[in-house]
Image 1 (cartoon, rainbow, N blue to C red):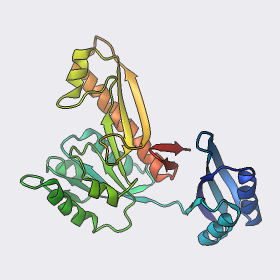
Image 2 (tube, helix red, strand yellow):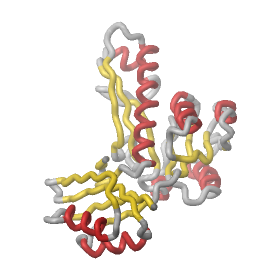
Image 3 (tube, rainbow, N blue to C red):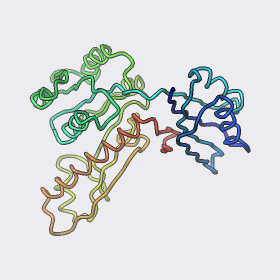
Length: 278
């Protein structure tokens, strides 16, 4: 028996769920899980189904296309371990958390390599028997540095996702375009937001009451890509800035892990600059 994840988005109209379900029934497929959502403002329909049966993937996709609006996007995905590459700089907390989850087989993914512009994290990665590529950015322009990174990435065809595990360099638009909706980033998000050096100390000095983190797809606008996952925790005047940093790092780890899991389980629709997640 074959298992498929079916992702559909199209203009909304009457009878879509019925038509799709009828195709599943006629093709001898059993629906294990089904979710739908309609954006009423945009008249946009989204549906994710997990089905089991004997039909071939392309045959199922063709059958669905026949009963859906012409503009419909249909993906029929066979569940598999997604191929991912991690990129990091100096901080180990997010990278280490993903490596441990991968080691414990919590993620439906295979980490192909870690790329970093410093060699500081190489001993950590070596413990997990994963290739580590140290590509220094010193004396290189962003374009020159990214060219060297691309040379490494090109060794890994059919790459599914690049995860920025506290990778602290801004990517150029040309690099981002090559991996549209395939680069996942994590960053701290305070209310209010703080930029520059030591944001946790800035937060402490302003007396913030909430510390949070945001995981999102990367686009050309810094930290403004489609949001996948967010979380916050409350703090108060008794927290030192070091304690705030510890809390913030804990949130960053869990939020990025949650976002990565959603991505590799094919639960995300990217829609304009938003996401629909089942």
